[in-house]
Amino acid sequence: MAESQTSTETDWVSRFADDVIAESERRAPGKPVVVASGLSPSGPIHLGNLREVMTPHLVADEIRRRGHTVRHLISWDDYDRYRKVPNGVPGVDSTWAEHIGKPLTSVPAPAGSAHPNWAEHFKAAMTEALDELGVEYDGISQTEQYTAGTYREQILHAMKHRADIDAVLDRYRTKKDPAAAQGKGGGKKPQQQKKVDEAELEAAEGSGAADEDDGSGNSAGYFPYKPYCGNCEKDLTVVTSYDDDTTELNYTCSACGFAETVRLSEFNRGKLVWKVDWPMRWAYEGVIFEPSGVDHSSPGSSFVVGGQIVREVFDGVQPIGPMYAFVGISGMAKMSSSKGGVPTPADALKIMEAPLLRWLYARRKPNQSFKIAFDQEIQRLYDEWDSLGRKVADGTVLPADAAAYSRAVRTAAGELPSTPRPLPYRTLASVADITAGAEDQTLRILGELDPANPLTSLDEARPRLDRAENWITTQVPAEARTIVRDEPDTELLGSLDDQGRESLRLLLEGLDTHWSLDGLTTLVYGVPKVLAGLEPDAKPTPELKAAQRSFFALLYRLLVSRDTGPRLPTLLLAVGADRVRRLLGA
Ligand SMILES: [Zn+2]
Image 1 (tube, rainbow, N blue to C red):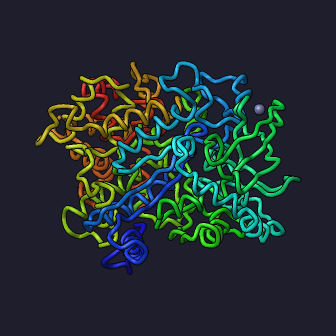
Image 2: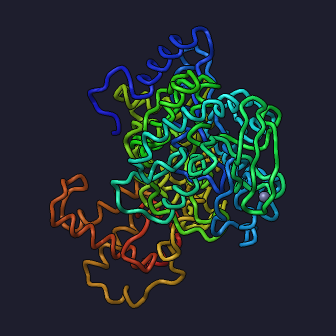
Image 3: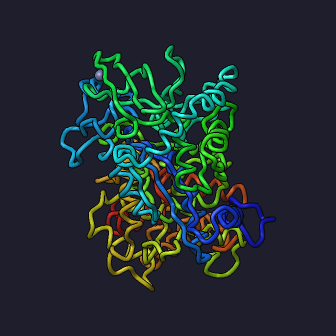
């Protein structure tokens, strides 16, 4: 299991909750506890970035369970510049490149979208996933904040203290780190890990605030603020002068040549550069806890620099900010269609239930990396999850595992939706594989799994059944799908020796009396024992195991024309007794 067995009363979530409550009471007694996440809707939001939300969510939820009021802010960094046209997003072509440099909320949504702009389009999918995951939060649009003038005082303050900011930034400019230019938002690969796949690169590029410049390199001086152009809306502007007394600012646009004089005391079309914007918001919102991607531990990273800027410029305090490790994806099928090849939280929720996905985050400390399985591994993961559920039910669970389980299945607001009859995922997947989703057939097979207590409606097996079906149809490659033979393999049947024929006879003879998942399990393991003259409950020997393996391979060849397939008892139930008899030559 994930948590160490030495952990007794508590887990990483409660330890952070202790610290965060104590710090909040010290800094802002009697006020709601504030935790924060930041997400950039610059394209499909990568599943890896979910850790940016889940880490503070789990801590916030623990704090709520203890009766405190918590605000979990999700800052939508939708006033960031549009940096690149992501590949493979339907309804988007190369003409979107003309919008590069505009705020994400000023870029048109993909063609056919129901949403008013680019940022809203990609926010919507994430919002839906967060709702399903039971994440309670206050969403804050940075476009709304900036364009409403909410941060006016902070902007004027930053401009006034631009020399101080420049001095902080300058401490790091000589030891500039490649990670330093990145925004937060996570999903970025730690540098020491070498293997980077395409999806992870997408995650890095699509995440966090833009890798915008920090305002330096301007011959007219250092300015931590950048206007979006009044003519072309792009941020390719250069501030040419600023007057502290009048707040008069001059800029020119290097994209279209437009120049303008504005007063920052009333101007709302621009933003602070990322490394100043982030600490400004810590101070403005009183953020006590905000994690960030592991790359931010490097010197010159925005978290480190932000810690100095918030203290020296905004008279604030840096949040408790654990660095979280990368979350990888294993085996995601290359997606040709809707998501531009980027696995999103919505994709994960199509193949697994929300509690399982929550559990993956709850059971690992933020500094531990893990992978979310889209491949065969998801079946083992579900087995582990079900086994944990049984331990919780019978009271044999370890405390830290119990904590992770509890965080997965419920929030302070209540239980998450669950499947009334949680049949094994691998069984559901096999059934879905074999029946291709035919409901009557599925109900027949699932009803026969446990004849003493038969499933009477597919709804009892939902939503887990739907997730397993989705996994089979979207993630399992065609060549790995199971195709049951229509006609017996007469050539193979005719080539069998006495032993082979006798094994099939024994199997067919026992079908009627063993027609359940447990019964067929006993039967298929028992036939080789009987052939070897052993008792049905005999302990397996190496010879017996070899005999079982070759018997199973024979059955697979005869039923599905391959050497392997879904677990045999499930396969036999799925194929149905009549067809089994026909294919096995009875
Ligand atoms: Zn312009």
